[in-house]
Length: 206
Image 1: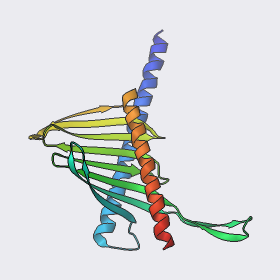
Image 2: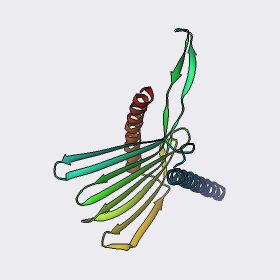
Image 3: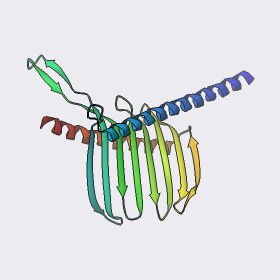
Image 4: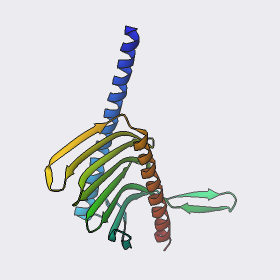
């Protein structure tokens, strides 16, 4: 019985350390990507720049009023060419792989900033939601992903009028409710990916 308990304890310790190492790896990837984007933007170097698709939209929504939305999609190009046996000719292929998405939503009472980060093959690794609500509670939530599942969650909350009094909690044990949020985030990523693919194909053909 003692050996069994020892095994269970070791197992959970392994799972916890694995999750932490994954989180640290993701944090490193995110910092490197942000630094690269900032450097390329500041230097204005076309050779090292990261392509960015940007769109802005103003809508009036019921019970909210005017909503200003801005989307920036940073991506890398993976174009290619293959020989079609059926058509007996070479055919070009065009692909844009998301690296980072910045989504900003502003209303009269709150601002929501969502940043999505992706690995080299375009898989979501981190989604950060920062909510500034002048009438209610502000929050910053980070969802860490591995193989399209949330593996770690970090949440910080504070009152708008008390920005210096923040409370932070972190979880490795992810609830079913949070996994459903993760599925919603992945669905949003799918829509963004389709949005990018359509616009990139249009732009590259002109």
